[in-house]
Length: 382
Image (cartoon, rainbow, N blue to C red; front, side, top):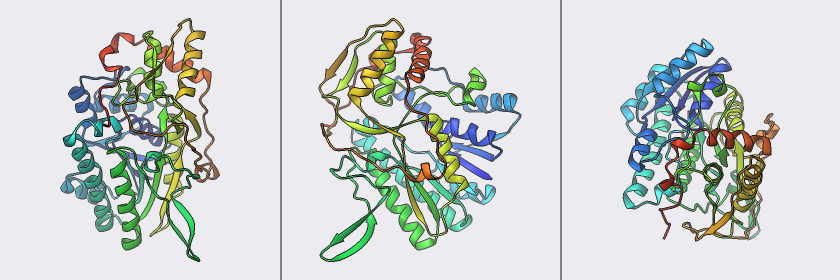
């Protein structure tokens, strides 16, 4: 299958491109390399040293014997996007090429606007190019469970059956996004749904939970293929931050009382979910939504898991509760449905002590790369 992986230099995109290539698909990475520029902007870095994209791809060719094409380009430039679809005629377009950090979107007005511009405009360009140049192409779009917010009812997979004043309908599940990062992804979902209805595009919207882990079978083949590992308070997830804090002997900093609960999945399951979506495409005109996560944890539970594993490795760290820089509910109901991908064959990798130990050891081996001034939050919602 001819597959484009947009954002293929990123944390999820890179291992996905390798996995699909290893499975025999014809993969092209499209990336504007802005994530590396944001590292420079924030004075941050990946804990794991990652090579330039061209060198990564060359290393993959050397290790696997397989080619991955690279096109450096920006999805907000329609000439680039339209040319890409005309040239490649992809059968699937995997869209990771969006800003993914809630804190980054909340830095200031300019960052919020850039987040919306990049995400919404880029996705609209892709939709228009599919309509005009590759109408059979299946759009596999990475959204986020953050689109749903924290409703006091079960979170269904994209749609909900409701009865109102004696009438019934199946409607999009109501969204309550919690940041200016999650909001444009709601706009994306609406735009994609409209394009499916009006133009007959086929699309799968993957509302992904928080991804953890570092390595896949492919990235483990050679140190030059290692995935990036974000740890700062802007791009680092709670679990990543706890792991790095434990590695450097810092208190594990939980925001608020730690009862905030979310869906999580291993990076190895992310790449498998993409494969499942590509190999089981939506029908023409179908807007399909999968909730892409495997387990649910509170922030406090994650901190306690890391604390235990660190202790087993000989490091004692305390759990410290900070004033929450975000605006979110505590002690809330959270129960999300995630049956579609399981029904299609996903076999989850669960968050075990063995997995945490592996990642913590990698972090401990790279503590010289950790910039300690980036560990604590500086961006606040208010």
